[in-house]
Length: 228
Image (cartoon, rainbow, N blue to C red; front, side, top):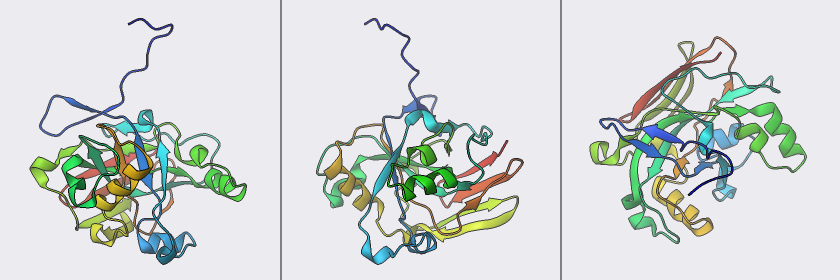
């Protein structure tokens, strides 16, 4: 097949223990999925069904590369998250079989231009300008579920310049991984290569150029990047 312009490269993530890459189809992000984070953002977690927004596959920043502070913002925030990578998909997936669709897990940051997101919210506009910018999803290599199982509990934290900013546990997620997959599959046709960023614990805050970020999810991986 020929194209009138060169097609873009396939967005992908490295896989631990493999020379092959994991191709990325879509990136779904779960909003306010830890109660304390919902509260710090001014919402009542008991009154809210799950909701999702998207980043673009080429927003991924893999390989521990530096995070470039983005333009048009003076208030960029960190959000540490567990990533769920799907090997298969479908529609109306049952909760009790949802984990059968998972290929593996990773650790990512949902970097957010909070000031631009805030303006969009106040005007009733979509969030892409605050969420889906270049390099806004720093991410570790994927770790196959065949090697580590399906983490349902364990520490998730983020340090900035050696100071703990975010500190939670995966068991604090309001909507668990199987529930997220099932709910999403009612809204979209999930595909192999889809990623789900599963939400962030409380403590989100700003970063500055020169900061060193170290994120961790127990049993999965550590993510270390610098802001430049």
